[in-house]
View 1 (tube, one colour):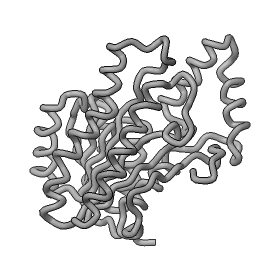
View 2 (tube, one colour):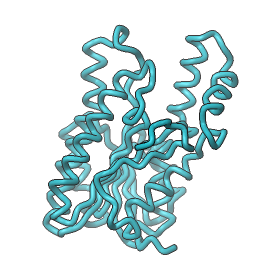
View 3 (cartoon, rainbow, N blue to C red):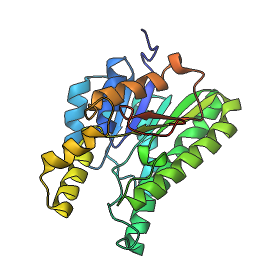
View 4 (cartoon, one colour):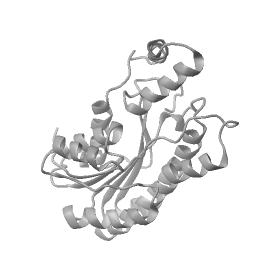
Length: 260
């Protein structure tokens, strides 16, 4: 299937590893010109090397709202007008309600919700002028079913979904699609770290923790990053031109809700 992404310009955040990198690579394989951003410039160079000459690195700390505007201008100057924005950032600090302080709350807000707001504010106006575009927020299955000991992720990502749904209503008449993609247990550094934390807290081995998680997934395994990235690429493409305002869950069937 031709996703009709050739020469489309995509800006992917949090692209140095995990879900962001997988999304950038899937878009690149389909012929999109991809700007990849994250804090670690060296890691971004590796991603650019993997994608090829159609990719450029634009280092960015998404918690720096002023830097977001500068980075957006650089993407446009190097690749052209942005057709696709993939908003992604590392997860907020794990912890429950009692263990989470005001400082962690502020950092989680800046990393997950405020960054999504500022990125969309920078990119959407030009999409409106052109009458087309797609914004995808990478969230979490926690927006459907809260995950214990991930208070900040449960809070902030749910707020991103609310923002995305509102944007989809406002921007649909302007030719802009807005949606979310929610990963379950995808084998990324973030998920490995969460498994390590759970193992340490419970006094069990990491393999035991993982086996327990996999037992709750109907497909019986963690997903691979490319499986997630390919879904993002499809949803960003013209082949999904009537999909907007929803959250697509990529979790191997783990969620129990019938509306998942």
